[in-house]
Each structure stands twice: as structure tokens, then as C-alpha cells.
Image (cartoon, rainbow over all chains, first blue to last red; front, side):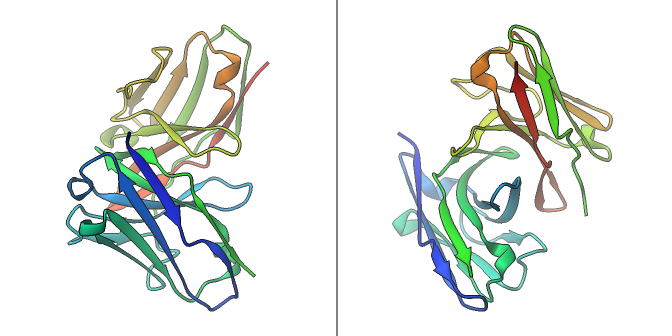
Amino acid sequence: QVQLVESGGGVVQPGRSLRLSCVGTGFTFNNYDMHWVRQAPGKGLEWVAVISYDGSDKYYADSVKGRFTISRDNSKNTVYLQMNSLRAEDTAVFYCAKSIWYGMDVWGQGTTVTVS
Amino acid sequence: SYELTQPPSVSVSPGQTASITCSGDKLGDKHVCWYQQKPGQSPVLVIYEDIKRPSGIPERFSGSNSGNTATLTISGTQAVDEADYYCQAWDSRTVVFGGGTKLTVL
């Protein structure tokens, strides 16, 4: 069963840092690009970042560029999102998602980040 | 930056056909995906590469993409299809989501 499980969310003060993790099981993790997507309370989906299957390429939304860093450890089937200089507007549910051609076919349950 | 525009809401009667549009500049030149999200749940991919359905997605879901508009069509809409729907595409190495459409089945 293909599954993604996020962790690391919580309540953090503005300006502080937080690292999210996402473990993938049931598929060959190192064959797939991985995304982070967030959803602010009552709002729509906002793409955050993507990392290639081998970690060589990383792309970010303008809203997080320079503050967030995506990385992965294929030996642990885990993708990370290091979030620095957090702002109130970063408050959201953060999902990791497995990449399929031009989209995302498996999503985690999400982890909640509150900046306050 | 690239933008995808969706109507905020669409209403449909049970058994009828619902159409949700997604507009963007030369969107027909890109590959569009659609996601369904029910309250309190994670998004689910219902259409990818404009027209393809993942396994487990009912046949009543279909997609099209031409010109500046992509469309998600739900034929024989059921109450269980009531949800938020988001379109998504790639542009210049970034991913863009539409603002979402709330589908009401009444």
C-alpha cells in the first residue's frame, strides 16, 4: 500500500524555524520526484517546492524562496522541508505528495504548522 | 507569474452533468491535472495529463484541454462528488494550482 506520512508540524513563533519530514512506503521512493504543498485555513492549495528523484534539482514557489529548503534522504525514504524565518502567513496544513507525470498521485494526511 | 482561474462555485442536480473550467494563457499547451478534496481530507488526483483517470476513479470523471481552457466533466453527478476541485499545471519549473471550485450537488 502506497503511503506518505508527514510529521514535524506544531506551533512556532514568528522568525523561528521548523523542519517537516515525510516518509514514503509501498513504492520505490528513489524513483520519484516529491513535492510539498500547503493549504492555509479555509484557503486553496499552494505549491511550495519539488525535489527530483535523486535530489539534484529543487524548485520553489516565490513565496518561500530563500526561506525554505527541500531535501531528501533516499536511504530513509524521507523528504524534508526546512522552514526558516517563519511568518504568520506560513500557517497552513503542509502535505507531501508523490510526483506522477505532470501531477501528484499520492498525498499524505498533512501536518499542521501554526506560526503565532 | 502564471495564473489558473476557476469559478468559485458550481452547482448541479444529482444525475446531471457538472463542468468545471480552468483558464490560463495557452493552457492547451500544458498538461493539466485535477484534484478532488473533501472537507478534512487530503486531495485526491482524479485526472492527469488532461484526460487520463487514475485507477479507482469512476468513469464519470473526464477531462479535456484546448486553447486557454481545461474542463473537468462529471457525468451523472452523485452526492458523493460534492467537494472542492482544483486544477493544476506546470509553468517554468514551478507548479501552479487554480483557486479551486466548490461543487455543490443539490
